[in-house]
Length: 442
Image (cartoon, rainbow, N blue to C red; front, side, top):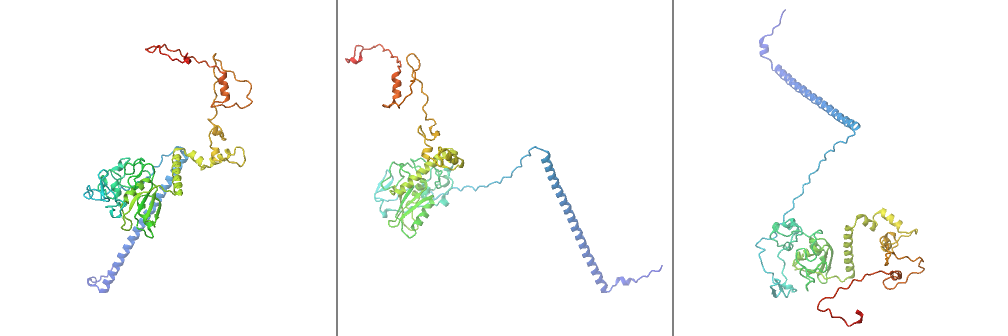
């Protein structure tokens, strides 16, 4: 066998074309191997994912079959599934901040607003109504920034801070009074105001001070108002900071206004908070209690409000079913009322004062319940036998004389009731021989 051998120089020294060809071939082989390995890895991953998907689907199907089989074969009630509850995170309440520095709130005498100082009431008297004597308040309460919880929030029945209302409380969270606005659920004795000060039987001559416990006053008077075109809106905006306002009235010709709150405690708070304050100008307000409105419409409105409050109190005291029946809100009760109140007359429905009347003369049978005369026992005569009733029926109504009827007087005249007289005790003492000269005592 002949073998053709190439010289060694052929392999050692190769032309440049051969080297370039070999390099290109090696690069292609490397790229091909890389692509092959990538496709192999991708195929393996997809195959495993497909297997997992089939296994998961099969597991879910088996669980559903087991659950259906358990529901069909077992009559026992399964254990309740524990419900996931969401945790509600409540925002912490903000502590009340000090409105002024402690040094600012040092004990000072009241500003001179008069000519004579009264050491008993610690105030100036005389000249209170002069405009040049009025001084502007040193501070003003900012409810949005100053309000917060204090020590008084943990004590039921606490009163509101008077210095907080005036914007001059230096204690903040350490205050023993409430630092917030009064609300509808804040109820106080009618003898004190929301700050715990005792009321009086009558108002002061200038309608200032704490007020009177003889009348629920929810209206305050505002004087010295700088009148502008939109003064009513300005007054409503400033006084609405202290509670819900029911009515605002401004007299432009006189420069005064009246603000009525829905709650009396808010009116008391606003009176102290706006005393000697100013609106949008540099005026110094004169805030007092308002006198009773002589307008008949206002009086009727106030009487209606009191009636509504009384009706609401009665609604809370009575059962809900009874209230719904009276007010006609229950459809079944309304149908029953329509049937019961016609009294056999088609199309007739008795009014409330007749249908709900009570007494022996009531038309409604329910109203007569408990009003019938109970059975009276016959009077006993001397031998203990009951008196015989008259066999003959009465043909006419017995005549009434005095507080007793004729039949009662006739029964009393026929009956002979025995009354045992008590024996007189033997007289003793120093006045035994003393007697009266009257013959009636014999």
